[in-house]
Length: 221
Ligand SMILES: C[S@@+](CC[C@H](N)C(=O)[O-])C[C@H]1O[C@@H](n2cnc3c(N)ncnc32)[C@H](O)[C@@H]1O
Image (cartoon, rainbow, N blue to C red; front, side):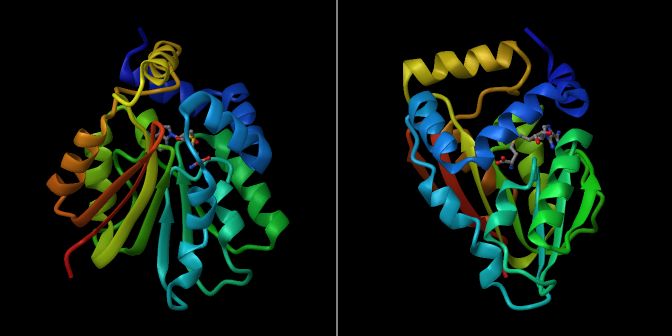
């Protein structure tokens, strides 16, 4: 089995898997079908969640990590009313995200960074979105703590992650992706709740759709 360091290197250096993954998520019909078949999940609420940054007051700071190819940009309002920063470990994904932002006419800041050590001061962001990343990270508990660190008091962490313990078929698929190095250590819904609470976040909500966990939590004001 690949080690967690190898998993991180695979995402950092890979080109084919990022391209294949991103191609699938860019096409809503493909993404919906794949999520249903592979994970028993409905991704329509995820598509709705992408509009959350647009409901913040102008000037709000948003961190999107891992941004991947910029799938969450589709919910952003045009213009530069938000201070939106997209971060990812993979140069290939960041390249795709930059192209996506250019196509949509969005002004976005980009950072090549690992979620293990975000290059931002504590209390920088009003919202952090983390879609489909936790199950790929080498140390998801530390990643949650690091994302919580960069939130301002009262700010929200919102995301999705694939969790284990929901069905044998989904667990087998996750184990396969762990062996091939795309996934990090297993994440259960109970662990996810615990990590969010341990990071000092409150109002923790975790809702499952198949093996996809939708979660939100807030930093106390
Ligand atoms: C499954 S993709 C999700 C991307 C995007 N949020 C989405 O929903 O399409 C996982 C992403 O995590 C990134 N990644 C993996 N390990 C990382 C790490 N340690 N720090 C930051 N990003 C990482 C990968 O490069 C990849 O873009």
